[in-house]
Length: 294
Length: 292
Image 1 (cartoon, rainbow over the protein chains, first blue to last red):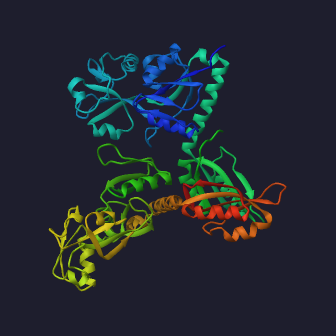
Image 2: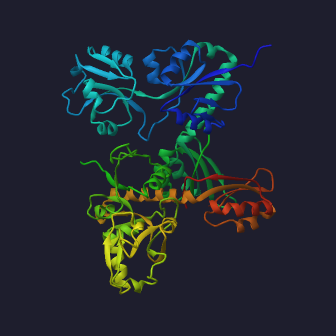
């Protein structure tokens, strides 16, 4: 008899580990992460986890060592791994949107454009992306690989420029660097390979997991909103509420007032709530959500 | 035309963490880089600074900032002429006011305010203490303290005036409270120039609405329950009146669905009572913001 079917899942170590653990928790899994042995347990005997860096997950998925994994757009490009992107999990490292991969130079450098990089030394964690970028811009420069985050004084010491991930100009400023060009925006993605995607059992397992992870991820961005509005206010209220989802409107018992229930992006609610208050709505309550599946 | 920007200061120190939490619930993510105090807020209309709360009232008064968060204590200490937009009510760890107290060593001979005559009082809020002494017609020497004020009596000073949230630090340093000088709360403050600017005033008022909603959300939870028709009146009377409850009739039955909000702490008493009164399917869930 055949043993139990298993899905091999690549779990990211490093910078996005904590967010991934949180996401599995939010998706409803009782996840245990063993720091010492770098092992993950979620209480599903059908999934085996391998904890490793996203840069390894992409090629491991391509080669079939793993069926599915959480990696990044940059890791896929850097390793040139042929994988299928199932969905963008859109982790944000901070409030400031996606992390950018930039070419940066010391503040006092006279390198001001990509052309100025000609014949210079560029140090980076992502040499393949960097070389590809230089090729596209028809600039020849020396690319030096360094496996650790490149900061500060190290740059002028060993190179003229750096290609590194940065969440904001602020970070670069602190490190005495300035960005001269953005290569790409990075994001966390869920990837699989053709073979797993064709396997009916694996595909269904992956799709269910994706639905929950994506639902939990979306819920982190969204909030529920409920409020009371009179009949006269309803026209204005419906104009203010996000058009994407139809709000649930219920008449309050024996009154000319309605209860309105909807979901909205957290960034939208900070614009919407003052407007609703101005219209005259009362009892406005915003509450967190666990999962949102649209 | 210049781009409209609101210059906002966030207090560094004990209020910092809770402030960021409240901003997050209000819908604003503030990022503090590992080094440096250039804050980044995800609203292009706001420029954000991290400053000591002692300095914020003065910078707001002088118009270097449009809006700031500081305590009553530092507003009074600096005697800054600022406009209080709203009371944000939170302290370091929870929604609570903090106290400035006069304290002396447990075995000190100083038993009353009058005994402070001619003594040395060490404090970070010199003006607050001087005003207090004047009111109480006591003359004493008030010395500015750079910090670690609690360790000063009895060797370095006879008494201190310091902030206390729980009293734990005072007890740990073998101090007893003589009197309360001031009960201080966290305030959102602006100046007349910003308050007269139409765009800034609107922006500030909206921000205040969201921040106050978030502070209220900290204390509140939502309650959902099903109530049999014949008991509806009694139960409605019993529910806390913080918000008018949402009442809906369930399809084809003499049952109602009630949604309301109440203080989180009340639920441990409220839920068993509601259950006993005949409510079913009681669900409690959290609140981000509440704007009544």
